[in-house]
Length: 428
Image (cartoon, rainbow, N blue to C red):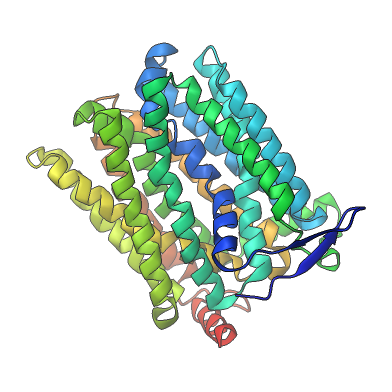
């Protein structure tokens, strides 16, 4: 951990200190769970949304895609902006947009209106995702960065665990529209908390001073770095395996395997806990094995789980007794992939953490937006498309990982071995 700075802000010289230890993890983690909350909380309501708005399974999943596209686009916009004006202003504006659009979703009268508001909701939620990563990069580096992101999975992992459960509880007393009312209330509370507790972590002298064109030029430069691209794309593909599960699991587990919304929430929570367990093991092993090795191990674990899932779905003999452990294994592997992909990619750009975080996050959510609707192409009663995606994504990630960011991706900022040596040195 670093010594948190004291920042004087505003005319009244409001003094804000960066929270330490678990307080910092909780605060940054709460900002980071916008993705899980936006995505997971309304999953149990997919069948009822489909019925209420007379929409097909793929059309309902497009509302998820709209949110993912919004999150990707929002990061591309807000990440570089935070490098220029500081972290607080775009964070507060984004949280405000999230709150308003969440309430608007509750009043949608058709699937197209819902998808449009979901896009805006995603753009607003992107502020919490991209700026929380930039804030952490402002404060940490080296192995400390890997460990913090792994610890952060405790907080971000809570989102996928509790979000479907909260959605199920809300559905027990009201309709799917109540889910978005709850999301709006969460956004309002976090908006106030962020205004009150989060200081500016990017000093004025460290901010980008170039033109808008130079800002986007920086993003292009980041995206063209061979090693960065390898880590970012491999991480995005590995995470897309989890998004395929998120998109398809509601229909698969409820319609194909007959789980109630409540039992679906429990199954979803169980599999999400696999990601948390994997991330915590990853944090303990980071210094010994290095983030590059652990990321590859996570992708292989995901591919193994995906292969088992395809086999169980095709055979149909084992049912949930085989499907649930296979899903757990994919999510367990994702606990290794996410923290290491982020830390390895962002480590190269301390002076442009917002831009690098934006490129990284937009790749992740753009990939997920492409993958999500594919899980439903077989209709509401077919588990095979989801299973095939959960196998194909980590296999593609392993290929990209080896080709773009393997030991041959050298260069001043490029090689894996160079980066891990630098991380170890900084940790010492």
